[in-house]
Structures are given as structure tokens and as C-alpha cells.
Image 1 (spheres, rainbow, N blue to C red):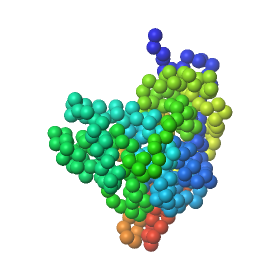
Image 2: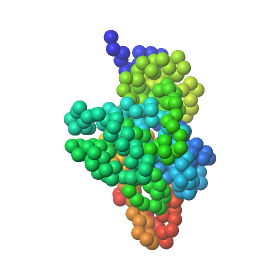
Image 3: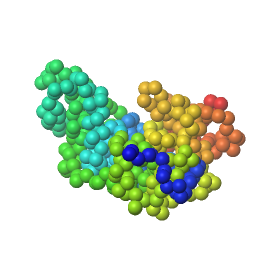
Length: 375
């Protein structure tokens, strides 16, 4: 008999959506900014989604006291953090330690993604030689996926360059090297192997159990489906059941069973939540099967685009209530705030004050800075 994903423990405390929201904001350093270092924050969050170079800077700015661009840029240059494909087969900014440790745990996610995308093209193809040659090429000199694919196609002309580079991305842990990821720099994403860049072999992977415990520390309380959504891994029930004696359990308003670390903070639902500006691709919007604790279902189409972009968002009273973008020229910068619903005067004032700080961070050299509300 299959196990239901709904709670069979009727005595488990019920947590309201707003209680779950406040727990999430607390663990994500969004109820009040934290004084930890950028590296500590990145590890506490189990990485930051980082498809584009600049969102991690905004993600850290909105969570940390006195965060400056140079702190993260220095971590890149000193090879203390890396951008690497991890959870959900997407690029994450993580500490060097987590890059080497978490990659083996989520490797099945990347392999599943490769097969689902290129199954027909790769039918009957031996992948190990492609990965070996690709690793040699990127360690010889960091190169883009486009360059890598073209070089590999010289030996495997029957396969498209994009397929060949995808094989290497999947089977060889690759990192994007600077200047990619450095604030104020530009350039295409060039890759080399994590082992070559960091000068060490892949770490003995942490157990799946320890990775899920870290997820709960940053995103809990959460259901098994939530854990699967965040990691990209499937069939986690057996692992979570083994952890059950060590965990607290709750029920949400939809009747789903939630798991959490014992004695983890659960702020009261009336805890004040200041306005916050979230970066593109913020993991809070991507790490749950049930996202009601952070965004209303009716607002998802306004944030998640058809081409896979997750827009930068604003939080009012802890929930997504609009999007934002910055337009910048050589001398001026403007922050455009698009609320989904009409804001109260107090909410507009609070967003304006926080937005002014955001503009000062994003466009320090601009001689003119303005804030524009679209409604």
C-alpha cells in the first residue's frame, strides 16, 4: 500500500500559511538583516540560485547588513565560492566546499535531465569518452559551451555541438570562472572543471539526510514534495521516514504533513515583516511544491515567465505583491516598481525608503536616481 503525502498524525500542530511565511522569512534573514558574512550566508541558504551574474548580489544585499559588492567579488576571485550546476540541474552560487560536496548528491538530477532532453540523440552513444575529452579541453583553457561543443564535434561529428557540451556539463562538474560573476564585469560564461579550479578532488559527499536537514534549516517546515521540488530528486519518502524520529512534524492548512528541525524558530504570525526586494530567481519561489507561504497562486503568471525567467519581486507583509526592475544609463538610474494591487500610502512610503537604498547599492555612481511606481 502506498503512503499518502498527507498527514496521518492528526495530533500534529497546525501551522497557518502566515506562520509558515514568518518561519521562512526568519530563516532567510528577511525579517531583519543579518550580520553574518556573505560566505556564511551562502552556506546557511544552501546556495543562491544564480542563472544570471547579478542576482546573487541583490539576494545578499537584501539579507545582510552593510553588504558591499566587493565582498562577493572577492570570494569569486579567491575561489571561495563557485557557480555550478546543482539542485534542479540549475546554476547555483555556493561555497567551494558545498560545490564539491553537494554535486555528487544531486548528480542523478543532472543525468535525468540530460536523458530527458537528449535521449534520442544519445541512444547507443558511449558518454564517458566525450566527458573525458571535454574535461581535458576545459582544463587546458576555460571555454564557453559553444566553443566546447564545436571542438568536440571534430571527434563526434554525428552529434550536435549543443548535445556534446551538455554531456560534459552533466558528467563533469564545471564551474564558471571570472570575470563571470564579478560585479561590474561582463563576458560570456567560460567553464573549467571544479577540481582543476579549486585544486582538490570532489569531496566525499554528505549524506542525503544531512542535505535535507540543511534544507529544512533554510526553508522548513516543509513537506516531502517540497524537498523533492527544491532538490530535483525523487522518491525521498524513505529517507525522510528514517529521519522522522529526529524531526518535528506539523500540518499545513491544506492537510499536508510538514517536517522540521526540532526547536527550529517559528515566529508568531503577527511578527512584523518589513518590505523587501528579492532578486531574480530567488530560491524561496522555487523551493516548494506548495508556494502559498510566499506567493499567491494568482500572481505566479506575473512572476514566472514562459521562457523560464523568474522576475525580481517585492515583498509586502512577507508575501510577493509585485515586481521591480532597474533601468540605468551612464548618469541616471531609475527603479520601476510594479505592484500587483493598490498599495496603501504607508506601504508606498516604506517601499520608497527601501528602494532608495537599493538604488544606492545598484547604481552608486549615478548622479540621478528616481523611483517610479507603475500604479
